[in-house]
Length: 380
Image (cartoon, rainbow, N blue to C red; front, side):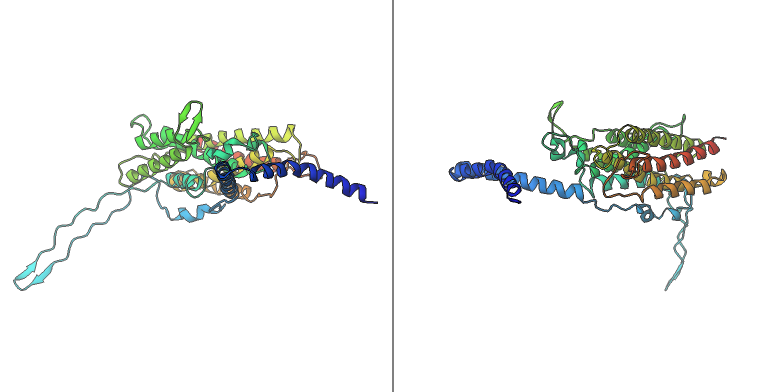
């Protein structure tokens, strides 16, 4: 009864295996001068794809509660504000010939509060390119799956999309640090370290050591991002010695919140478009990178906005928006709880396949509405 079915599958197995048998027979008949290079290439391919598989599936130090490690609640003043100083004098000493008077009081060096925004932003860069491999510029990621862009497949692209989402939040923040937060508007120049950090963060996300357009050797993307992290920390070191400026004014916070609101608004539009016009369910190969980009963006902004609450605490207290700010961060953290194993883009009114894009879009809009409300209160 089952003989025809068994014969059919045997025939399929024979047809599939026949080319490999022919290749193996051809390979066994060759001399080592031919076998050696072929075997070396095969080993390099196996090792390369093994490394690529590990890096795309291993998310080192991924933690939605990463903000807790910065202990932002211990910051007592706004960023850039001078910290209290203490001065002391050496006590008088008694010797056999009399008493040596105490040395004069030496004023302590002036120190200022570091910026939590800068610290968290630099930490996110470290997370993206030092604690993890930057997937988007890896050679095998650029080559794709037999010529197909990995973003157009359901495999191995989630981490890359997540990292690009985090990077989007970092880029937006680096721009705001240069344009408004890191200078006294109208009375001071642009900080050179922040300017360098912004320039490095705008670099192409997919550059490898060699490129075709333009043709020739290149500096890979992670090197530029690491340089940006160093520039940010140099600014923070200068701020700690009161040699730099962080302008924690209400209008600067309004502008920063406005830019973040616009940024995540663009992402919600992308999610809406994909959710509305494509209903492939579990078979939508672009749903996963859309979802994880949005997730990474919220992951980055959760830390950056938490840091902004510490850097602008005086404004937040004076304008009475502390409860609203806390609710915004609560909504951001709630969005980070959504971590489905497989991303589904089902119909919004469907009942079989879930619609994770619409769910993520709902959380983004909740965060955005809170940010808009905060901006409106601050702008009054």
